[in-house]
Length: 331
Image 1 (cartoon, rainbow, N blue to C red):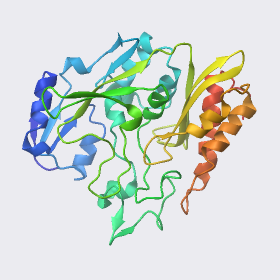
Image 2 (image 1 turned 90 degrees about the vertical axis):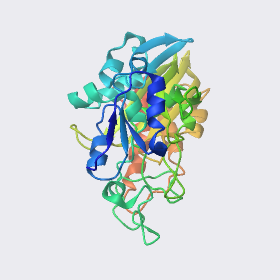
Image 3 (image 1 turned 45 degrees about the horizontal axis):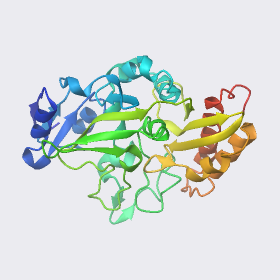
Image 4 (image 1 turned 60 degrees about the vertical axis):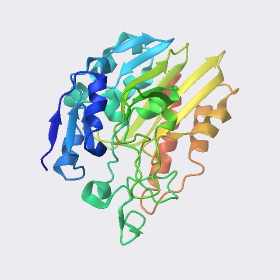
């Protein structure tokens, strides 16, 4: 690990000011579960690390504007235990799949949304696009865990966030502050992520000197939700495919639906067509099955990850069934 300055702000204003020094060549330290590893591997070389653990305004879960506001520094354990989020089942489903007590206690919701890809080419220094001699290492290499959707461009990795699909399905927004001291913007989470086209592009809209401070989700309004992750093992493992769904049912019919898939594309993938196709239909296992089929009908798997198409289809089906409390006995 290279040497760096360490800063410990107490307020939002101090945080933004410290992030904008060194021409923005800085990094935010939240839970640190990924940042420290990346610095140790020399993938990130910030001149200053800004530890935001003492900024109290970045923590907690509150009722705000007809919804629930979550500080970006709120831990996964706190999210799981908050009575204000008790009806947002899809978030708890994700937390239940994270089998590490340490990650639940130290990992933060804002940190999860900003995770860099777990692509092993990226983690071994080949960049987000995994290029060598202007050729993709992924296309003809080991791409077992890479994207099956949205992968026609140079980016083949999958977005690493486990909570983004659930929050996007709820219509969450994020508050971005900086780089100016008084600059802030509330942005739909759906528009927060980017698919890089060149090696200099990032995976989010965040610019140097900016960070997520809060998230906001609407009240459930009686809507149902669930998440389903396909895990290769039951221990410390990243999902092979995942899906989150929100459902509004009336007399057994689907009044509204929203489906977002994870771990299958360079960004959380909103399955608009799949959700639209089941609106107005009587909800059943066959309805959920049809949604899963539509969600992956345009998939373009790589040479070694075709199996993920079936897993993604199953994740969508089971997320919908779980939301409607019909998963037991379903396939």
